[in-house]
Image (cartoon, rainbow, N blue to C red; front, side, top):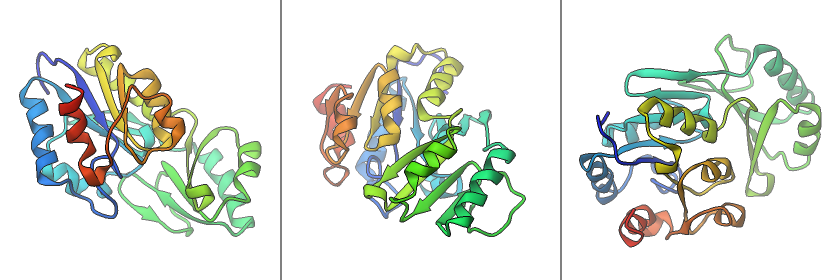
Length: 237
């Protein structure tokens, strides 16, 4: 953690810092992020991924904070400031509905991804597969969850309505004593929209949906063209 930070930078992971299916950044981007830290800024990531999925990335750069599982788990340095799995009663109810409809899904714990089998571990998020004809019914029946739909319903991420990347970055800024106006966010997905709305500046990747670009301060190149590094230089961020 920097003692007198200038700004706080928060980056989505997939198709922002890394090009899927890779789990590591290109070396030049990692160098640019380290340079931000050396200049007195705090940097971190905000993603739907769990901690195990982030290991390779974290080994590349020592981030000042990690917002994992769409904001359900947040760590600043060695201190955990948010740890909020899905409430057991809510999870049991939605799982029954998914099993009844025979929907394929994965369960995200803090460190693992589980199948539909029973588990005593705390669940932080659910990923549905081929759910385009079922999501609206879920939304109506289970309003205590947030639904992020990808690829026109080929997949959908579900998490508690009590958590989000936006709520998480507000807590991170408060932890570091940095005004939210001095936060700069990068992202490419629907789950970044709320975060973009609360941060001081926001940069959407070229491949982001129009809904995200509409609330962004700038639009940069794609991850394939190292859009984060390009934006940092082009927009003097």
